[in-house]
Length: 303
Ligand code: 5RP
View 1 (cartoon, helix red, strand yellow):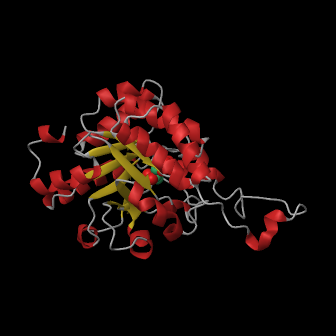
View 2 (tube, protein in one colour):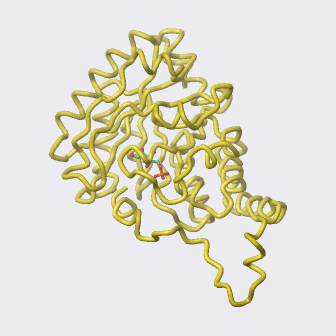
C-alpha cells in the first residue's frame, strides 16, 4: 500500500514504514498516552515500569512528550508516535476542547516518527479540532512527519459505522496519513470509505480472549492493526497479552491460536513474589485492585 503513495516524500514514507510494516502492511502500536487527560490511569500510574517490558514487543509507542522524556529510554529503537494535542482533562468542562500543545521543533527533537492528535467530530469543538488537524498536516509534511488522527468519541456520541465512517473520512480528507478509530459492526464500511490506513483502538478493558477477538475482527475487516492500551497493560499479564495480540497482527494467527499462546505464555511466566509472604496468610484477603477502583470509571465509559 505504501508503494502506491508515490506522492509522498522519502522521509515521510520512511517514517510511515517504521509504523506500518511494509512486509505485511500491518502495525502493532502500544498506546500509553492516556494520562494526557486522565492523569494516573489505573495500572499506568508508573509509565516507566509499564513501558519497559512491553517496548520490544510493539512496532511503535503512542506517547506524550512528558512520558517519553521521563519514562522511555532514549536508547530504544522503537519508533515514537507523539501525541501533540491536549488541553482538557476528565474533570474539566468539555473533553473536546483540545488544541495543539507541542511544536514541530520539539517533536523533531524527540525524534518522533509520527504525530498524533484527536479530532472530535460532532462535538462542540469539532471546528477547532478539525482545523487544527489540517494545520498540523500542513506543518508536519514540511518535515516529512506523518500525522495520525484519532477519531475521539465523547460520551454523547455513538460508535456505529455511520458515525465512525464520517469521522474517519473527515480526518483523511484533512490529510491524515493514518486514522485511528474504534471497531464496530459493519466495520468494513468504515475501512472502505477511508482512503488511508485505519488502526483500531482497544477501548476499555475486556477479557483477554475478547480483546484478541476484537484484534482479529479489526484485521479481518481491513484495519492495518491495533493501537492498544488498556487491554494490554491493564491485563494481569501484559507481556503475554501483547505477544498474543502480535501473533494475530503479524503472524496471521486466529483467536483460538492466539489465546492458546496467551495461556501458554502466562503459564511460563515467573511467579510474582509475594509481599512479605502475605499471600500465604489465609487470613489475608488477596486483591489485585488498585487503591481507588473508581478512579477511572468516567473515562472507561467514554472512550
Ligand atoms: C486516547 C487515545 C488512546 O491512545 C486510545 O484510546 C488507545 O488506547 P485504548 O486501547 O486503551 O483504548 O488515543 O484518546
